[in-house]
Length: 208
Image 1 (cartoon, rainbow, N blue to C red):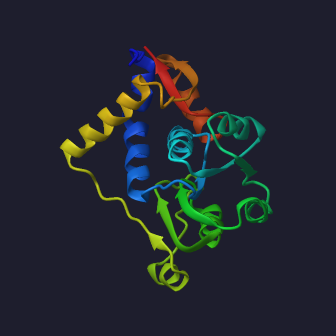
Image 2: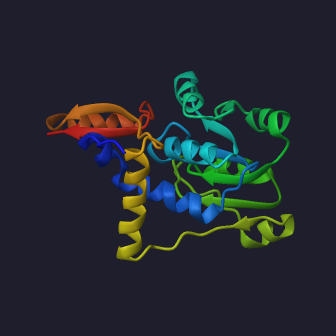
């Protein structure tokens, strides 16, 4: 086990425990076809790695070649730009249907991803980068044989264990937090602007 640099540890504190919790809730199995939305983001980039390590076929959805290239480097086998209206068709061509969707975008992207799930599929919505949830109802899911997996707020001891697990995986070299950009503390406003413009990848750190 190697020592973990401070910046990597900071980058994992929130996103690492979230990705770990999502992966456990999804009960990932080898052979699963897994879609990770916002695959170049802080949580998404970790989910790509965790799913690939579990033996899943990872489909990464992100906006732009730079973000898709990063997802590919992290282990995604299929890369689709969700700004292309035909992206669901490309997923169908590549893997048929999906077994798991990690929905970090919501809105139309999340709904389209739901439509790609086969019977027995699982969908976990944890973010709304689009500004809205996917709005999939329990009745819709039941009709298609899909399970919507909700996340409860972990107890303090569970949060600690999730965080420690993510940090241990990183220290062992099995999980790499992506720090895409750093800003001096007095440029915090610029950091927020970069995130809002969706020009960032991975985690954004403020340097004191």
